[in-house]
Length: 282
Image (cartoon, rainbow, N blue to C red; front, side, top):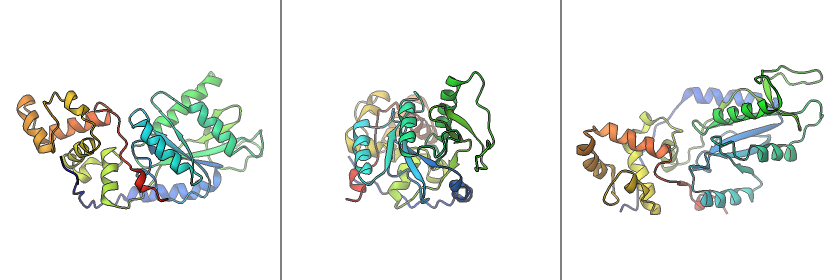
């Protein structure tokens, strides 16, 4: 099996993201706390490049897809630098009450009747909208109506709109998920982001991403894909896999790559954490 993957150089310049990140930066002064959503499969690589000069909580979403034990090790080491971090699943709403409790502890409202305001953001495809929907569903627990957007109340100096996600304590969430630029340090990090869908497939190429996926699973000795794809043994490259699947399903090469990648992103090949502890500075 390969011990090294020659990650290609990725020319990535999403201008709309620069604009979105700039808009977040402009509005940060209006909120009390910032929720940065990351993918639990890449808790380091899915970080953003915007300095957040606010109380911040890092939400590691999609814990149902990561290697929980390994992601927890990374999380504990990140906490040593003073980060507030919580593992989360927008699919099951797991830990939403724990998250609200943490917000109350680290960013209590200055005035009880006003409450706290928070903003949410993260790199693409980490589940920001799903978490917002989780908060919306949670808010219906204390109102019979769908949560409506609200404007500033008396004595509230904020000029943002949002919806109430908690009654006790009173907490509002700004109703716009922010798309943020990832902090790309090398080509391997870009490949991880491409694998979890934070970089569009067409920028890197689905065949390259699917090949990298096989490399990652083989490297950690997770061969669940062998059973799921009904293979006789692990394969080293996507070309090897194509040679087996092409005659079986009469698929073209692009279809094979797309289907394999889709199965990975649905968690059908088993849990995996792509980042390493060695990426963290001591």
